[in-house]
Image 1 (cartoon, rainbow, N blue to C red):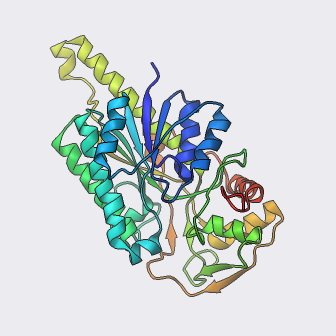
Image 2: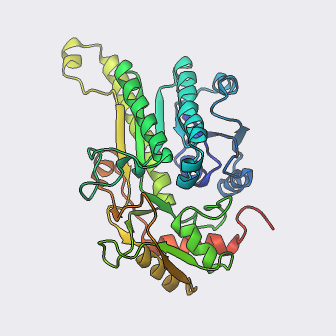
Image 3: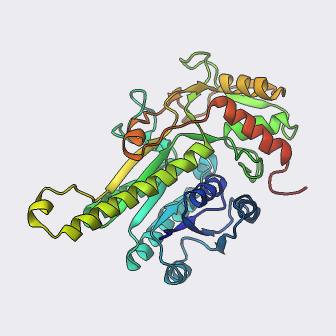
Length: 363
């Protein structure tokens, strides 16, 4: 039987790519998005790419009444929760907006899920919850701390999910901590489309290359790294989307184990049964290696033959020297690992940007 998934924030950058991966894996999809920092056109293009309609509902996760209508109309296996604001700088300027949307919205969603007994969740978290790491690579047991309201909102939700799992064994809560998503779908039809000046490095590079922006500012060239610029773990958005499918499949496998265990109805067997309750499960999604800002800029220029003028600027407050993941847990539990290279990320980003110089807006 086809499992149906509610994808909150499914019209966004990562959400739209994940919708394609979900369809390819045989899941049914309902997208719920308030279009604050996403585009309805993204879902239109996803539907074209998969050659199938996608049910889209414009709505806010803070709207409990509307969420209840959605859950009453569908039998969901689980939820992938992308809906959230995500700009670090904006979060510093407008912290209440971030806590209201990201934290309060998640609480409302969880309350409705509980009412409808839908207790499988894949949550979109972030490597920002690790703050300035004490050791590298970062694994899931690394200490957590945050330097901005965006990161704090993700960490607050993680604490809520941990407490929820302790309170009720029926909850299965996979928290995916992303590192630095970049790239675009190979078709060039969907990709990252910032509303304003990009906050992230790769769309800034591509907008300089396409002539929308004059030059790239690289913040800091005196870090203790290979070339003085910051080192990050870049992961192709298509790999990231596959990670969400792998997380759902893991939850399905655990549910099947639980069902089979109950079916035996054998006290001897049950006494030694595998614990199929997932509870709170944090998993890193990253490539497992770091690349510097200059390495990424150079790679982009080489593979696209486009000039990317840049200048060095002072370090930004809160930025750290290096951050990259240990992805061993994802490989062991989800049978997932990143497949696509920095070259793939650059080529696919440029294809999207050059085909869509103004993003989803035609002018």
